[in-house]
Amino acid sequence: MQAVWRYPVSSLRGERVDTLALASDGVRGDRDYLLVDLVSGEIAAPEKIARWRPALELDARVTSRGVLISSKDWAMTIDDAELDSALADQFGFRCAIRRAGSSLLTNVGEIKLSPRYLASPVHLLSLRSLSELSELLPEAIVDVRRFRPNIVVDTRADENDWVGRQIAMGACRGTVTEKTKRCGMTMIAQTNLCEDPEILRTIVQRRQRCFGVYADIDSEGVISVGDTISFDER
Image (cartoon, rainbow, N blue to C red; front, side):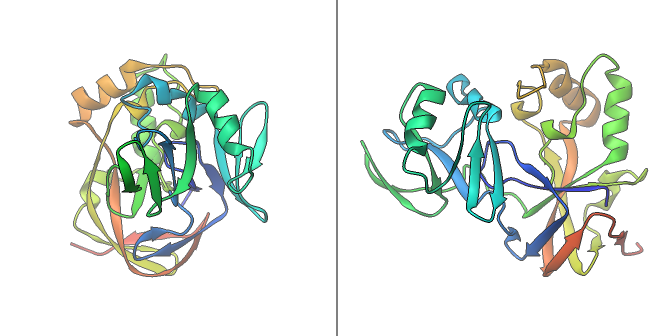
């Protein structure tokens, strides 16, 4: 595998790491937290709602002090008492980062904070797909950060052929379950990347909206950059 990524807070920028711990429910430390409107309880959806777009100007990474949230102007941990205020300044309304599964008292009552969607636990993307998209869009910045994979696979194989197959990733085993349907997150602007609708338009037109695959984890363990990925024989 060429690279591995973790996204501690859903909708925020993630971190490129050396290793990932994989469990049956996904990547440890991945999307454990949600960005939420403190008044309505709405979960951030930057690909759909413009007021959430600043989420992609924030980084989230795991440190010895806990999950660290940073902008170009400040850095605070999840537990910092000033974080809610900093986020309100960033977005222009009261919002916060809270753990998925926790409860929040809103103007519609107490709600349980749940992710907006539940896909298979691990997202894989091949260098082949990135290269092919770059060839189709020579003027575009086809950056892996637009697609938010957990694992980038250094292969020239077609990842669409992986669906339904058993996969071995280092010490872990899993099953590739489905192709990844793409949304507006692939085209919206983020730090050092401009907005580019042609990226999603091309994926829709040339790849039936699919780019990457999801996998379930059957046996848990730790994977590292450089580990071999292999598939069962059909």
